[in-house]
Image 1 (cartoon, helix red, strand yellow):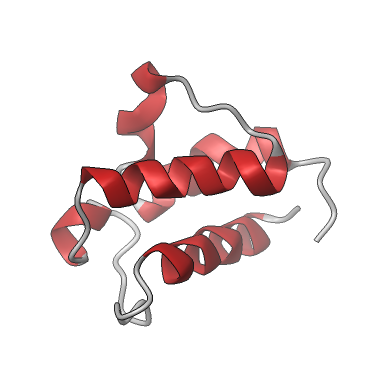
Image 2 (image 1 turned 45 degrees about the vertical axis):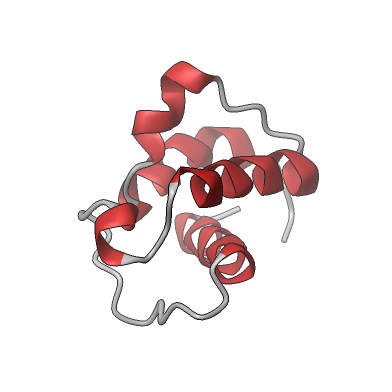
Length: 85
């Protein structure tokens, strides 16, 4: 998977978890929770969706690495590198 396709995967998952949110103007460097009306349960839903779709386990201590869209892409790139879209 490319970085752009991983970014799209994350956006697709966020769209499922927070369907009423406008994702078109997200700043990749700002915290997702500061830009979207998401709470900690929504964040956990994103983590669970990653596990369900791609069998990726995200340890609790790594959650802060997923705070921004860019952080998600950075964290997931090596984990999804071999996955085909």
